Image 1 (cartoon, rainbow, N blue to C red):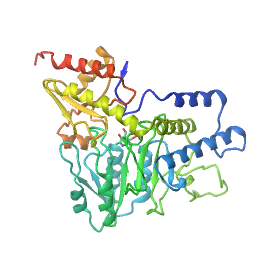
Image 2: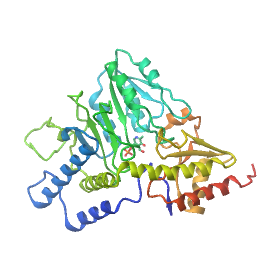
Image 3: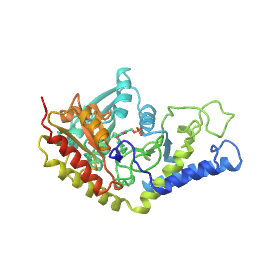
Length: 385
Ligand SMILES: Cc1ncc(COP(=O)(O)O)c(C=O)c1O
């Protein structure tokens, strides 16, 4: 089988990630802060090592501001529910994932915030001036995904962040699709909150992600409370960061895999990985763009995107294309709305969505050729309708 759904979760995982998980299962590990025995200590070390690796990777000066979460979705919920107050005005881009849209729609439905969507062009690009013009005295937070999970379009977040800060608001960047793919220096990024996924470009296992809290933010309410492994006499949630936000036994094997994944990216070099995956992406784009009846979405290969290619074939339902690719050609892709209906409204692809191919640097040139050939055979099929 040929896997082209790395935007959903990356596969394969690097050797060192697989080896670390095997070692954890074979040689034992406990729960951090839950006991003073060797396994508990090992778990504690895993958590602090991964936190330190992430702080270094994103250039965050204080490790306490790196919060480990079970997913990017959980991190987004923590940010929204912990940061926003009654009557805050929140701006989001029209390319956001449902893990941004749904919690905010929920807060707006309960009349706790006012939510406004900033439109994007048909390639999924946001105009920083348009964002700026919509900021008013009540605007507390602007939310932008660094890159769209539908078109791969990268937003000019540094410019947006500069303008947002100048207007006294805060910027949250959803880097689920860019962490590990694009360089992110939190110190110069102009973001106040940064959400990342652990199981995509950082090569950890599913069930990993996190939130980075910038130093313009000094208070955040936990949205999940419970055992933290310390100060057990206290019946209220401890306020110490990062533990205040990490209640419950953490996913230590997942956190271990994330630390190893970050080490893999750091060692291989983000720019070397990017060069390779964008080269594969360009071959895919070039091969597909010649086909009759094909529509490719998002910007062409280049700086302004990550390697996510959405397309449609005239006369074909995306789901049918996905099923034929899977069953007849062994090519695994994602079809439909990709949990981002707003993005599809921007592209004009509601309700059927698109077929999404997301290679990475593990994808081989042969696999790209096979995929193009499989899609060409469908494009050349004379349809009875
Ligand atoms: C842009 C974006 N944000 C958030 C998420 C949610 O990530 P997770 O499923 O890890 O919570 C995804 C997942 O695909 C995504 O693509």
